[in-house]
Image 1 (tube, rainbow, N blue to C red):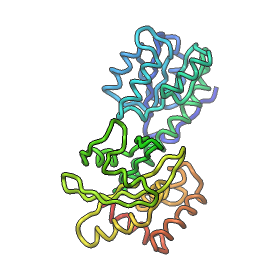
Image 2 (image 1 turned 30 degrees about the vertical axis):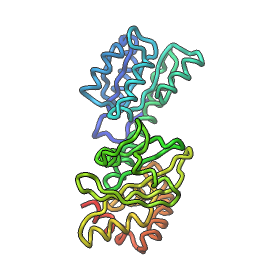
Image 3 (image 1 turned 180 degrees about the vertical axis):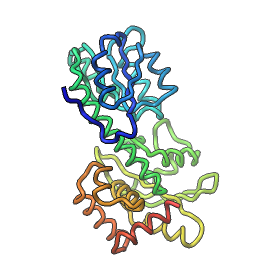
Length: 303
């Protein structure tokens, strides 16, 4: 039977398989190995958490019902750890009742496969989720590489998501806030079109711009540094004033690295035509006419 091949043969993705009867998954593990994955195995939830202290896999295949710590509780603990929360968890279990499926997704799973396992089906699902997770991480990192950070805030003022750089700046502000809520000093940024300036205790000057409502009614905040010096300040201010969306920032970041429209489309999972449309908006917002001018402006912030 033909197996799926991974797009990048130079790096083998790592998948952690957690099941109290791993011997019964021999065919699945063999299929994964043959398809380019490095397979790690844990016999229960506690063993899985111990492995995750040593290695961060690209995906986790998790049995729902195991002695001791259940798969559902194991998933909750994984998602509660900021360093592990990005890992896609796929449940594979004999529990097929609706309540079990709902619990699997509620605790953070991205997919639910009922036993008996069909190796090729699991492989196809795993391939899709692993690729999507990698693209998401690349996009998230691209925002931070551009010298900016992004925070999404829900209607109740709770932080729904933050890029790693934004998380560092929030921590650096050392501003009082209730658990999970946006710091009080940043609340003015939730006003439509708001732009506020802050200084961290270490002296870093930050601008926070409200980019409007994103998916699920969440407010998108763009963080950027205000560097000292004419050239750096000009470039930083110009990018901040452009109010690029997160996707436009991703496109600009990859453009600054010399990527073509086709390359950027493959990285972000979209078409070259869509990338070109984003570039048209970016050029207009930045007040430039060429790729080279936009790349030069962004490269000044990458240094």
